[in-house]
Image 1 (cartoon, rainbow, N blue to C red):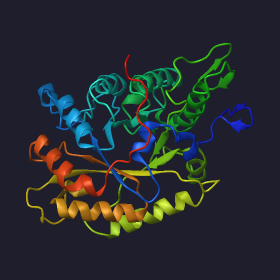
Image 2 (spheres, rainbow, N blue to C red):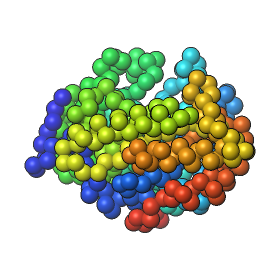
Image 3 (spheres, rainbow, N blue to C red):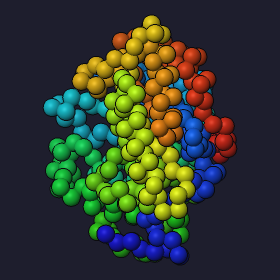
Image 4 (spheres, rainbow, N blue to C red):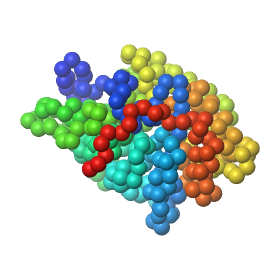
Length: 347
């Protein structure tokens, strides 16, 4: 991998929290010792009929109005029937641009953009565009990809996704510098040119998902934040294990500055507020009443989690009903941070 140096700072280094002090999306989502809530899209599971997504953007507008910290979209380029989950269906960047026009404050997050499949120039162009259109609300979860069928379709080797991911992160960050620079990379060579537009506040947070086939020292040095699976969620043992994982990562951050941790869970929120935390589908879904969910969120906060993204696409109740209950009964306990207002969105 090439690690071109710009000034005195390695272009591949993850940025510490001060780099995002003016970033409206980051500041809305993250603060040390606190936990905020986001919602994962789609709000209903796609099973061959796009009509289940009808009206979703209106509900995202309600999620924004209620004061959630973020809304998340997934990046699944190709539907693999054997995998069984089409994800968001829509292209994440196109859809986030659409949602940017229908929302005002909520952070717009990718969970996660596949950096090993897409070229960093295209990623940087799309990301900077959405960040500008939304006034600085884009936060990027990024990953190396987990669907083997996609790699040969792109003419890529699945076994090489880890190295390609790290090179793409390096290239992406250099492009965002906004200066005419020379980039020498396994993914291409650039000279006498630069990326336009630049991000609204000069930078975009990159939250690495899982290991993305990188070492823990690499994650500690280069990730602006870490997004991991939550461990078991039906008892306190899972959050305790998660706390150990988070601490192991944070202990290796070179400057010991704050870097946020994010986790997520697919929930089936029961009408009975006292319904106990019960794993479904082999632990893939958590059925619980709101009191059990509040208990879990508190355990996550104590474990060092700074943002929880909840998916309701597999829930039994209507999406609007669940969103309303979460907004009225759960969100006040885990509010979004005020932070800086989004920049100009009058495009």
